[in-house]
Image 1 (cartoon, helix red, strand yellow):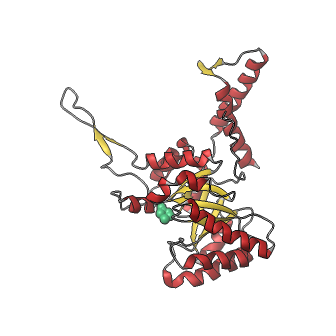
Image 2 (spheres, helix red, strand yellow):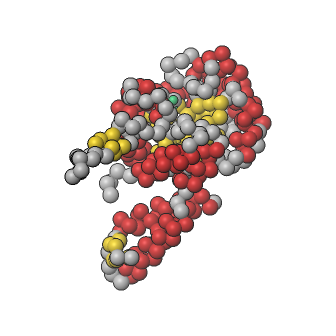
Image 3 (cartoon, helix red, strand yellow):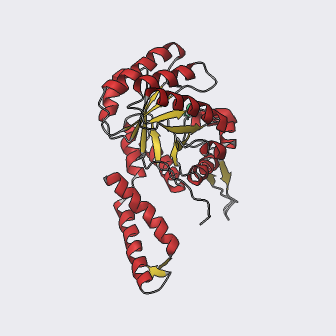
Length: 324
Ligand code: GLV
Ligand code: MG
């Protein structure tokens, strides 16, 4: 290990994160009763300019009056380039800061953006005597944000997670995509012709680099990497595939833009019984190996060593967190 110790963000369960527009308060109760881990009440892109003020009031009332159980509650504020943002922070933290766990900052571009919001939240927390520190979730969804992702990830002790905002990222990078998440058949290669002259199209994942880059920045700073939206809520198989490919890269959770996606996210982002059993067997086998003075042994015909312990511990820890 490096001599540089990585401080881990608070261990919050974040398999699923449900987006609920602040302008639709009739959806709040249903969201509060769902099995989702984190809810973000949205003031940004799901809310029209004329509705921003009312949405803010709805969110403050909803946070204070609804029983959200043990869910983590977040509010997505407007971007720092809008005049809505300062009032989002001031009103929501002043009037509903007790029940607020997280603030989601969209289109974050530089470490200074994080600093600015941190300064405001710190002043309000001090003034109000709030005991619990509000954490930050950052949506990496612009070319600038991706360029500066490492500095953003390290910019505040409030930072908890980085989220891949695929829709805005596509717009910002001018990627050829008009859907939210998912694949593009043109991001593909052709195989060489076989003996009969036939060629196959191999589709690729056009978001691979962005997601992998964000995962590294998040983990190197002790934060949770979370995959963002998948727009086609009538395509559970497509959602599952997108969630699995994010999970195998290291993401801990995925957004749900529709309540039906919550169960899918929870399913994919929870280690399966088979994975947990295997992880426990690895830990047992390594404990026996260590007792016998060995650093590596074979399990089911494959080599395992001290790195296998660390991989297995990640799964067992996650299973404990879910069971708690
Ligand atoms: C989320 O905000 C996105 O733009 O995908
Ligand atoms: Mg966005």
